[in-house]
Image 1 (tube, rainbow, N blue to C red):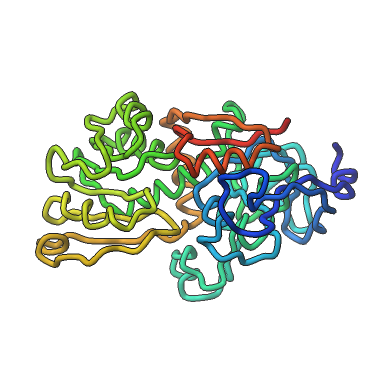
Image 2 (cartoon, rainbow, N blue to C red):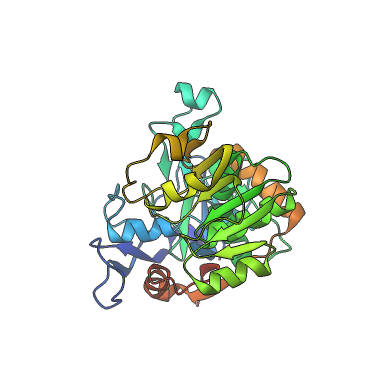
Amino acid sequence: MNSTAALHADTGAWVVDRPGPVNDATTGPLVWERRPLEALGPHEILVEVEACGVCRTDLHLAEGDLPPRATRCTPGHEAVGRVRAVGTGVDGFAVGERAGVAWLAGTCGACGHCRNGRENLCPDSRYTGWDRPGGYADRLTADADYAYHLDEDRPAEELAPLLCAGIIGYRALERAELPPGGLLGIYGFGASAHLTAQLALARGGRVAVFTRAPAARRLALDLGAEFAGDSYDPSPEPLAAAVLFAPVGGLVPVALAALDRGGTLSVAGIHLTDIPALNYRRHLFQERTLRSVTANTRADGAAYLAEAARTRPVVRVRRYPLRQADTALADLAADRVTGVAVLVPG
């Protein structure tokens, strides 16, 4: 499709109609519809989607754990595709190039956080699939300044998960401050965790995984983890650092208690159930640290994608046709996905 035709086409897309449980595809929150494309604004690109990862954040949005910020918004913030049109002022992308559209969709650029390299904390930050339509669609628009150039030598469905699962895992690992050769505890082992484990191993760390899913434990061992147990199993040794991916607040004291002195636990999710009361001496004393992770900066994204291009992590993909996004979310909710679910055209 040429750029002129692309600008005048409509698009098929999933929208969150009424947030609620996704376990029943016939009455679930997602509805497929056709609608006109939004007008292409200055500095924006139109992307024809080749693949879009299915993230647990999409599930939280669909089920109402995250309050919607746009009416009938289209989820999806791990979109890989081809640029089909460019708006005025775009000089970083050309028609036909591959682009990645990720979670962070815009910031004010003027607040203290933006000026100090912490744009992920911008009070006016905007997000793909939450504030503006995302990648559960045939096409989407994006601010070119927040899109990524991607490798041409890797399938789109393997690149898509890198755009959130990979990037947020990168930031969570940075926040956890794993020392060289240290043992990293990973709680929950889905899309982001299986990429983060490989990143830690590539950096010379060691990995212990704690997850309730037997298939995920097998995958962890296949990828190089030296231990894989149930979510509440004791660690084989004190953890130098830990990352919590499971959205289960009850695992926070478990992970903190498993930390060695001076260790840090970073919580990677945007949503977490309530954390039980902590005991100061057992969970925090001896300079144990608890940190949250809030989105990412574009610098995080660029750094992770460059590191992934060098280390080429294995991406365990389960493909779903785009029109089965509701099924993919239901499978994710029921822990039937090992690795990462990815939507592809067709």
